[in-house]
Image (cartoon, rainbow, N blue to C red; front, side, top):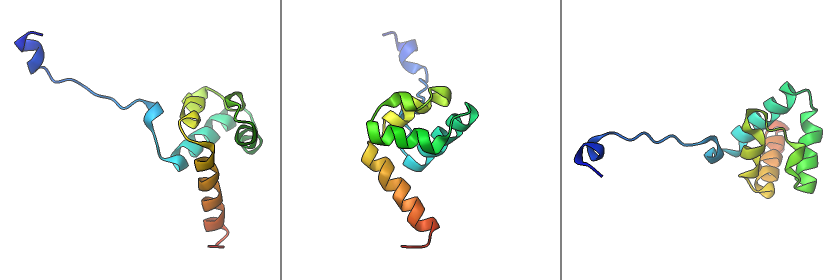
Length: 89
């Protein structure tokens, strides 16, 4: 590598695949499914029960995002959100 090449600033962009906030991923997946005309609840449940990523559209990179999170983590976030919203815990 030349000295000139070493002096240049390199850009680093975190790809969408590295978004790790489970709640944010669920929001994006919900939005993508809704925009494509699917019932987001049914599709997410299908994915959670089967592990089959084809339940999730690739629109907005939703399928890639959701596959980066373990299904048990998704369930934890969903239960946490439900309990918080229902003021149970």
